[in-house]
Length: 115
Image 1 (cartoon, rainbow, N blue to C red):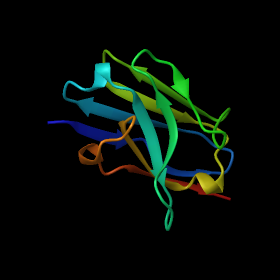
Image 2: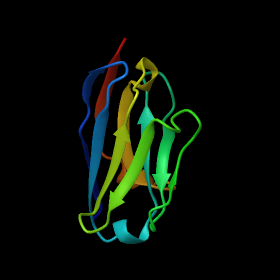
Image 3: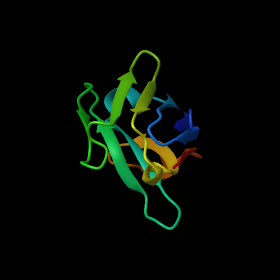
């Protein structure tokens, strides 16, 4: 059974930083590309970063240069370093495989950026 547990969210002022962690269980991690996603109130969930099994990161333009995804295969953990946060980054952040698998969604971690 696969479990993904996100942590590290919180309240931060605009311009601040947060580091999110996603601990995984099961055998999927080492062979899977992993992604961070977010869902703001009233909006669809969107991809904010993904990383290949070999460690190559990818970002949409909305976060490029501000967010950094990384993974530690020894710890079965994927990270999202978020810098220069903006109020529009406020959302619940989730990790999942990339592409995502419906049954893998966890509870997410809330990130709130105040202006």
